[in-house]
Image (cartoon, rainbow, N blue to C red; front, side):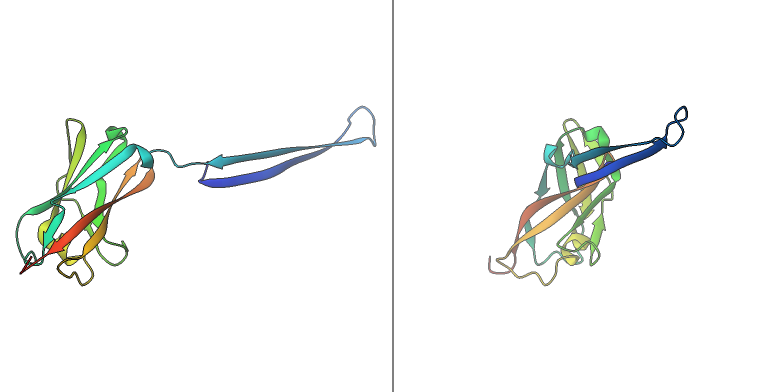
Length: 152
């Protein structure tokens, strides 16, 4: 299976000539490629709303990610998730993804989305990541959000 990055090897064969006993022949064949992950650059994401309020913890409603571009049918909608910087720390899975026209809209619990942030402070600009699998490859798309709260 082709993998991302530089790859090289050298194939070598050694054989004895069946007609001329004792004659050995050898050959070498170098092989290389540079594998690139396709698909990630084809997609864009917008997180809506892009202003998150410090009053959200415990609230109802949703945050959504609108994924556009590329081959939307190649995306596994059950793989869509939202996280801040470390998916091992806190991930919010989508609760209702679906293709609508020329985009996929994935919705996330507003309270869970805000809870995944590490110590949000009003006035900050944060980057969240929408991750999904397209054609068997993980794609990470960053989006900026602004934290607001009382006094903003």
